[in-house]
Length: 537
Image (tube, rainbow, N blue to C red; front, side, top):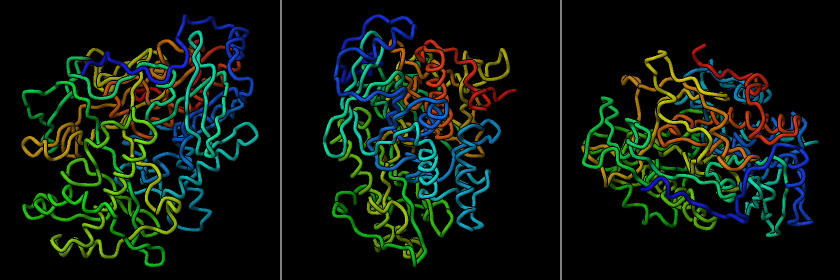
């Protein structure tokens, strides 16, 4: 795949030369003739992911008039739709909005008068966490607290973006009733997992895996990684580029509480998914899989079920997300239904197929879906786990090297204008399914269990990675500029909360100094966020 074959989608006006930073020029561009019925804001944030909420709330707290719009009807993205903890290994590098989230969820549990409030350490990956409904309540609460300056529009889809003289001037949103709403803003923030606003504005982007030679990354490209030893199994195409990215899944919540349980049901598409599930019987028979539990325990007799990074069959659907990042709204809806039906089929299979070992079926016999989670989406997640989407071409790029020791300084590299820290190990789920295994390994998996030393170390993420090269008033804190391997560290929600907060604060600085976000001095942002940006200090 040629990484330079960038997609230029949805451009409604040609990009021209960058304009000067004078506020009069900015106001002039914003007032360019387009749609006299447009509503104006200081900041438009598209995408109510945790990063988007952090951006919108932070900008509102800085005195900006903000619109937060999202296709989803719920705030909080994956943190409120099945990702029930914070993927982090180091508590000490997260502060700002991340700590506000942890403390806010804990306070909600305290108000519920339960002794179930997760401690900070419990928010680490695989160690339990919060119920999705509690996280959603936190996000809804911080949005509501800024209602005097922050409007929140649910169920609104981006239709188009207008770019003039190197600036986004206006976007058009489609409301749930089908009406079109033109919106103007001084600063735009794309907080979607996919990078949809950036794409509509014509920002060049990449989907897929670069070759190892592209940035001299040892883990890049097609890889068969033995997570048991940390060794790479070489094949003729090892290190080559691939359009396949790591699998998505429906990260579901189950319960064993009989008073809160809805029995599992067999989906109409079960027979369609059965061929993908039957090989699990071979895994049981051959000893590759000895059991299959309900997932990570949560409060209230609930469990978080996630796709497995090492098992050949799980909630993950490798390869089925190939089209997702650039797909139309209708096609994404079909792909989302496929992932949800796969999850429902997987649960039904483990609970009811007579060939599944008795001890496994006994575990699953008491499981069902919780009545008090995801009530308007048949108690399955309203957001599937989009682990990565587009990655923009920015003014700086995050790669494997950002999270690797530089022997010259005996630490990870120092970057200009750091605004967040990535500290999770390189972590990539399978990119192709079990039909394409080599030596029992699935293509694309990069995972270091506790007994295998990982070369990743905590590293800095630069402000300029959020800035497209040729647009001065757009920030992209989620689908930011990175390689595939760099994104495997960046993609954790605590990092995206931090980059989102930095984007919102940058919008506030832009308003304060009457500059575009590309012209502000980013140096004060970490102090404003009360965020640590040097994990080695």
